[in-house]
Image 1: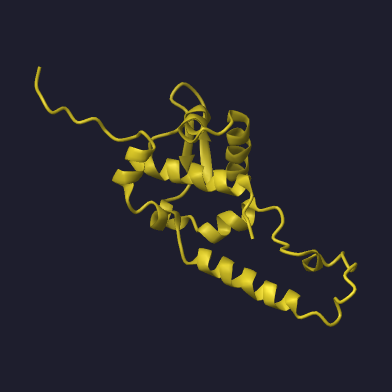
Image 2 (image 1 turned 120 degrees about the horizontal axis):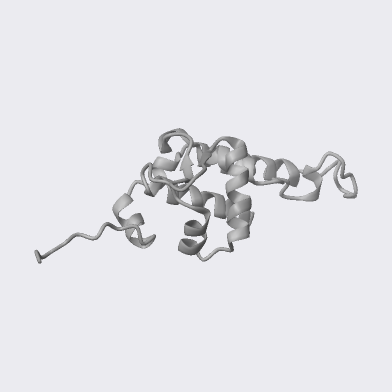
Length: 152
């Protein structure tokens, strides 16, 4: 199984916003920090806003903010919302009956259990859990605060 780029970018945007700890980030900033196209990041931000994961602030000091505390943003919920299709194989789609062995195949059941286990594992974690090292994340994202070591 492979998550879409959309989900990957959504999780990265949420990580950035959590790392900024209540300070807004712009779409331009997010796209530059991750080297992702601004258009892709706009679509991701729009979808996350639709779902209520982030909020947008208009105006000069505007940008994107988390709509909830990081501990209240569940990773399983984000993945379920951003993935358009969690059908691992054709037979997961109830409208697709083209597989000749469908009536006797047990693979579908095994894969359904595997997907359920994958999502259950994601459900155990929040955004706070994956941003538990804020200093290192800030450093890697270029958000580290500059400390002055000498007086002028």
